[in-house]
Image 1 (cartoon, one colour):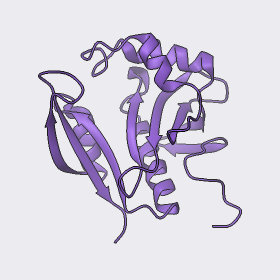
Image 2 (cartoon, rainbow, N blue to C red):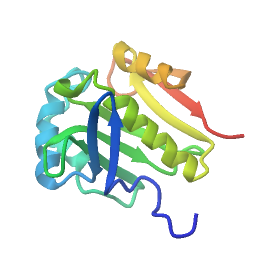
Image 3 (cartoon, rainbow, N blue to C red):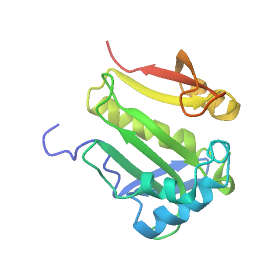
Image 4 (cartoon, one colour):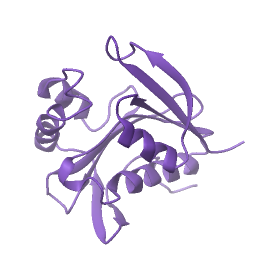
Amino acid sequence: MAGLPPPFHAEGVRLVSGGWSWHLDAPSPDGAWEAARAFAGIDPWRAYGRTADHMAQLFAPPERPDGTYRIAARTGPGSPPAALALVQSPWLAGPYVRFLGVLPPHQGAGLGTALLGWIEAEARRARARNLWICVSAFNEGAYALYQRVGFEPVAEIPDLAADGIVERLLRKRLGA
């Protein structure tokens, strides 16, 4: 472990899946704003009434003292983000994926699976026991993806992010 960068620092990481290749790094302020506008216009964030301003505050700066790492996936260096992830670590004996979003033009190409795989590998490298994620009950596509990669539901939480909407908390056990 000596000499390795701390987990969730994505600069220089390349993901390959299904013939596609993505480059990971921290979102730039311009990239964060561009992604914020795009994510605010799609569900589940649109259903919650999240504005581009709110989303941009989540996506920038690259790191904050609360332990949240911001990760952008791009089709190439300098290209706009195709996906964003926010990983809070530490959380409950492992990291919590606070946000995972893949923009529609890149959905279905394996990017969400590849990004989750990288996050899991980083959590394992840090010797985390768990990996956590939360998903809106109406977001069945994301829920199916998370179950496909090994997450298991542990709780349903009504009215967490918005009144009348149930959130599902899921955990992937990484170690004993």
